[in-house]
Each structure stands twice: as C-alpha cells, then as structure tokens.
Length: 424
Image 1: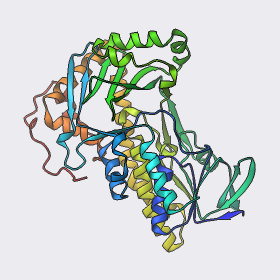
Image 2: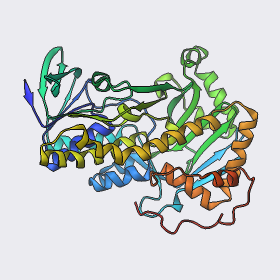
Image 3: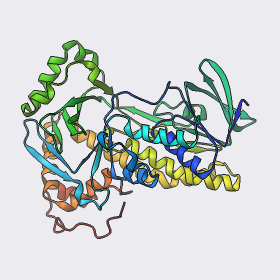
Image 4: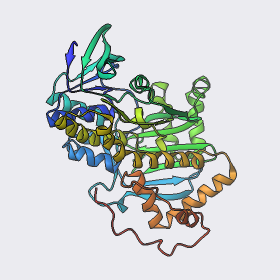
C-alpha cells in the first residue's frame, strides 16, 4: 500500500468532512479523498436547520460562521401565486437557542468545516483523487485503489466510508442493492440583490408552480424555482428576460429584485432524486449521506442528515477501534440509530412532492386547505416544523392529525403545544 490509515473516506462533502473532523478529534487516523480539484465554490441554496446548527455548535464551529454571510430567519410564509398568504411557519415555536433557520451564503458552512479540519490535520483531504475500486485480501476489504492527479494510489484502511453522493461508486463496488428515483422536477437556484430589505422567507405554491425567495445576509436573496428536470436547455433558449417575466407573473411585488438577474452565471440547476440503499453497512465498510439515503430538498434536511450520519458513525467507529471489530454487525448500530429518522423524512418529502408540485386541481385545493388549517393550529404547525427542524424520529401527522388538518374533524388540542419538546 502507498498509504495506511484507520479510515478512508471517499467524498469530502457535508458528511465526509464532518466525519473526518470528529475522527481527528478522537485521535483516529483518516484519509479523505475527493475527485474535485478543491472545496466547492459553485452556487447552491443553503439553509441550516436547527439540528444542523446544534451539530456545528457541538463541534465549536457555529460561532465561527462569518456573520456577514449568515442570516437568521424566523418566519416562512407560504403563499399562492399573486401573493395571498396561505400559512406562516414560525420557528419561534422551537426551544431556544436554535429557534431560527440560518440562511447562509453558498458553501460557507462547508468551508468552515473544511478549514477546521485542515487546521487540525493538514493534508487529510486529498483533492483531485478519484475512487477506482476496493482493495481486498481474500474476501476482506483492506482499502481502496484511487487515481490521484493521473497516477494510481493504494490506500490501506480498516474501514472504507462511502460519502460520495447519490451515484456512489463505493456503494456500487460493495454491491449494495439500491433503489434510485429521479423526480420529474428540478430547481433553478439564483442569488440576487434585494434592496427592499426582505426579512422573512416567501414560498409561492400553485399548480405546478413553486417559487421560493429566501433572505440572505448583505441584501442577498436566494430564489428557488421549480422547473421540469429536462427543461433547462429550453429555458436558456428562451432567455433571461423571459425567466424574469415568469417570476414577475407569480408575484409582481418582487419585480425590482428579479430585475437584478442579468445573466445565467447567477444561476445553477439542482437536480432531485431519492436513494434508498438496502443496507448502509457491510464488513469493513459504511455509507453516509446521499450515498445511503438521498432525498428531495422539500425535506430541507439533506446536509443536516449527512452531518448527523457523521456524528453517529464517528461514535460507532470509536467503539469499533477500541474492540478491533470492523464487522457489519459492529457497524450496524449506526444504521439502527439513523435509519428511522431518514426513512420518515424521505416519506415526508415524497408526500410534499405529491401535494406541492401537483397540477391536479383537487390535490392543490386539498393542499391549500391543509395550509390554512396549519396556519391557525399551533399544534399541527409544531408537528410539521419539528420534522423540518430535525427534532423528531416519527412522522409529524397521525391519521387523526391528517383528518384534522384537512378540516374533516375538529381539533380540541389545536392550541396545546407538546410539553416534552426536546431541547436541541
């Protein structure tokens, strides 16, 4: 082997970098390989939910997020096209101190994590290094073979972690059966300037229409616009001016903000898909983040769940190292702890796709009726919010809750918030 380490992590994204940082603090050696030339710098929407804030706080990194690039947001207003308010979700229902969403500039969170790792263990992340295959001794995994800047490199390890996204090559090499689903819609993300001073998030939901406007620091706003997954070439062909007109038609009140969209360089396309791996662990290997369980962004938990995977797996790795047991049965504790919440969030996201993305007038009517009920029912609002915030393991609505949300049954507990709200 060219290198030997305890853990080799394939992918330096949201989960892989966090895992590397925690292992470094545990005194467990790791090498992180990533095929990119360096940390990401592209445009992407960034909302840090309360459970993600808690993880960063526990790592001592929350206070190191640059204040000029972070904006706390308390309220998210859901509206129909034209501006009529359907529902307001208020993060102040959650226990302090994590009772806000944090909207950050692109990649700020990731850069903060990577910098902390680099300060602690310089050179642990090897960019420009692509995973090629698993290296085995008999039937036992003993490391990986990669290509680093055009030359082969073999890295010996006691554990291989696939943190390499929804099309994970590590998962493929492990032969883990996986259900991959691509949604029919993707999202165009833009970062614009808002001189009007947007304080709270606006989310327009209509028939086959979704447009989100999220306040960022320094008069910046993110715009999130749903389009068919194959529609970007046609959209570009129609031109920027036509795109602005589409947005203005949804709500003309933001025409000055939309006017700051001047070229396609201010945008990025985000495809959407769901990953359901049959198992997340095998002997001497594990999967985290989208490699194990990619989900639709409606759940607003993609990065957060990868970070939570990393925290849980790091503790399991520490126990495995103490016992020198890297078997699937020893690693399975990680999956048992994490899978219930992930499964719940994937199902919740799929349900939101069905109702929020719909062009069916009956489903759209029912969706708007549920929004209206949640708006005047703090208990149901908290149920939904606690899932988005990453507080809960179980679905936000029982069947009784669903009937009450649809307005088919009265809710005598509408103004009774849970007394056992977990402190984040």
